Image 1 (cartoon, rainbow, N blue to C red):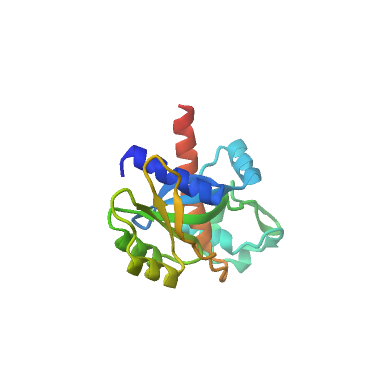
Image 2 (cartoon, helix red, strand yellow; image 1 turned 135 degrees about the vertical axis):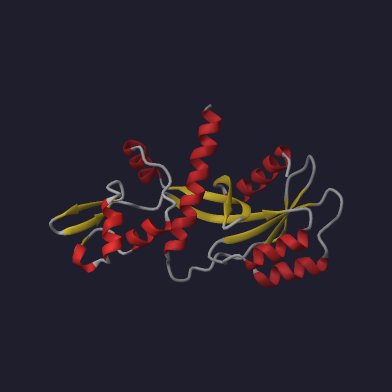
Length: 207
């Protein structure tokens, strides 16, 4: 997408979600994401000079540490202990064990896919995990969204937002709410990817 188109798409997602919008890539798939920043964790990292933590191995180690309590190093795999000791900005170690100071930097609420082929974009969104709200951005300046594609989107809970030139965007199909499911480290990792882009894009604005 061209810069103007990206800005138009990001504006549409921002209006829908009332959250900051970043462009990111998750496992090779490009998308826009509505990212809700956690100010306290952001400020802690700013003071510590720490940015996004995208190491899956480290995040899996941190996942073993519940919030608000110590975990003895003897109760953790040796490889996890070594990784935690190399990341004092994420956990502190005392004679009682490890205490997690890490918190996710925010929450990725919504993801948005776009492309010249709206049917293909809906299929991409449908295949992506439903733990995030999923929407497709369709440029309707030339061709409206086919009814068969609308039906597919409704079946899979994928929203469709029509983008019009020089007009407000229009919700063609409302997106289903994200599936709550069982919490997992994957949510942390995707939030870190979004946070990485949030920091980069805000740094670009300042520059």
